[in-house]
Length: 337
Image (cartoon, rainbow, N blue to C red; front, side):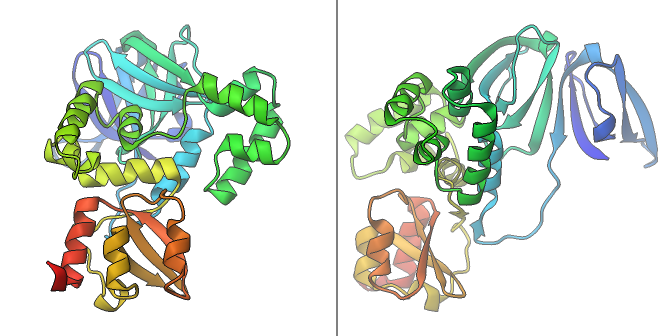
């Protein structure tokens, strides 16, 4: 059984369980097992024509590890799909996700969330409840459509990407001599999905609007000492963890929630104070011979190499909110406050 939240076009909602393997969008109706007022399960029959969307919910998780790895598998799963869709319903609600295929003439379609913080793992959307869909092809789909690679070659590259995690599809295909450098550059121009600054990443992941981004950029011009992420958090447009999840997904890195993290003092002092302050990083976890170091800018060129000069441990980077990193540095190295 799968937990679902069924949104109806009349504004009502039904929460319960369905047989995921038995759910078929081509049928006229489906059954949802719900709890009655007496706490006993009852079966509700839902007409497919009345559905707005069916959200298949994630299993609830417990535990609070400092370092979170889940963004990696979710981002690879979403990246394996051919389309990125921004869906606006008739009632004004908007959702974002990736899809294996999309045809505006279909009666419905499935999405996987782009934003790993979403409570749903996939959603069926009834096309009759949709006002507008903005569809954008992803890199793998573009290369297949241009007949520069075959679907089989894309499949092999995606599997390799899943194993390596840190590399993008275009880079892998180039290294495997499946496409030329010129073909890769041409496809990158069409895709318009180049490496982005944090604002662009957050915008395209659906965390913020264009208006919110422009306002934050304007404020950053007035106060250049503040990072864009910090300004967005101060404006309450998003949370610190929103930034970490978005960047972790974009760069295929784990992220660290330092808001209430219990970092051992011995771990924090693995690296010298001057280095920690200069690079604005903080060691957060030791795992055998690996040291996990949190950074707000883990893509900074040469960062891993610079850190490795001061320890024999293998360095693993994790994304963290800059405000929390600053607080951790002040807590463990108070002498220069």
